[in-house]
Image (cartoon, rainbow over all chains, first blue to last red; front, side, top):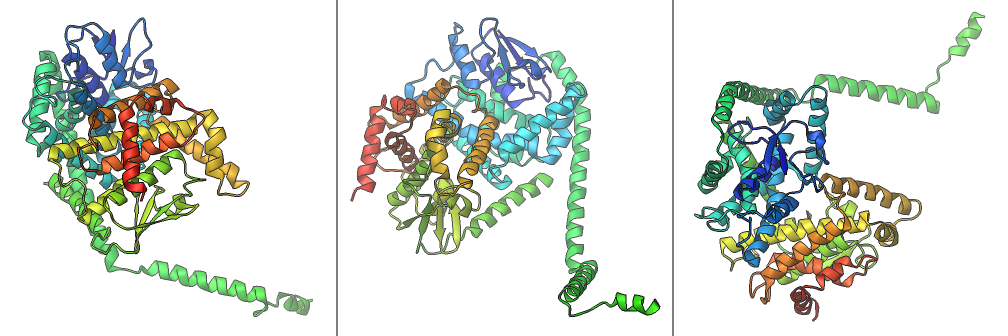
Length: 314
Length: 264
């Protein structure tokens, strides 16, 4: 069995939310699945990573099905095995809740927020995929994200996400994992949503700030990543070397943001000062006069006598 | 610093939104606008309208139902049903619950924070999964579309709108489903999803009167809306009803709520 996921960066074993969820879940039950860091998502049936390839079966790209596959793979550690039916029911409900309330905000943060997208997401994917495919892929994925988010406005998305983070924090309490001392498939899901928010340097970080305000969630992310997803020495070194580049980009983006903000404030002030603008009133006056003239000529109030002159000259 | 400022921006925005809902006004002359429930409403719309009605009856706030053919277009964001108080319009189950909550009427005051979290999770599961399942069956399943959806959706328009509008609506719903990765699912997978929802709520309901014990919450209202619709409405496809029959406590629950709130 092979698990194909996006490469690692920013202290994360993989950059993408869904890939991270798959990876975490497989690590939690110590599955012998072979992890392949790849940048060729067209191999997957949906054109997206993560995907599980198995000689016998069709490729799997759905999280629930992946968990089923892990349960049936005959490992010593079976994920979600010790749960009561009641706990399992809650698990299902919570994974839906996260998908509906937290996922839109995470997608928004990485794909729909203009500044974040330009500073991090676009640059990262563009430099990891080869030329013309990266243009196509980024456009496709961003369009899809925007379509998914279109039904809600930005404030609602953020409000739901803040609420979801608080709910998660309450639910976790002082426990190590969401269902006591053993990790479950829900823990992998939560980790997948939260870890990129904490680790990836972003210029627009409203969600990050809100997440940092829940210390037990931050502790949860640290615990899971140190137990199940420790990075190798080379990985850490390689990521350190890139770190500077990202910090530069981040600083630049923040400066731009500040500048844009000042500009918009200034423009706002100027616009207010010279309202209504002179040009608009002149244009309006001209338009009104023309229309009146056309109307007058058309109905015969004014008559233009060109023919008379012609006759006279003849 | 920047982060804090933008964070503050969001909160200001939230407060402005909350104030614009004008929750202080009196609960007078309240109307709930729904499509024609018997001839026009599709199962997901019927379920949502019923859920809101149940919720309002649970809070014992007075309201009257007005059925209009074009509620979809009256609603500012296309979400059904629509609640009108004086000049304020509130759309959809979640916002109505939110609004009523802001007025200080709440069904969850007896619950602990963790119970409220569980309730929210249930609401979100019932809402997202069952709605998607219903949309899939209505618009993707060919027989249902030809025999039920097309006629009901087009019933309030004259020809040629009665032919064109269902086609347009079908296209938009299908593209929405495909963005959510639902369009490619097979009927069996839809059945599995339905089974998952029913199993989850059935386990949590157990032998209780309502999902969280003796008193009803908004999750019960939403659950009742969907279950009652699925039990009573006849569709060419009987898979869902058959799956639902495996969970007798859910059917009991539906009868109980109907008895308590819809039979005088």
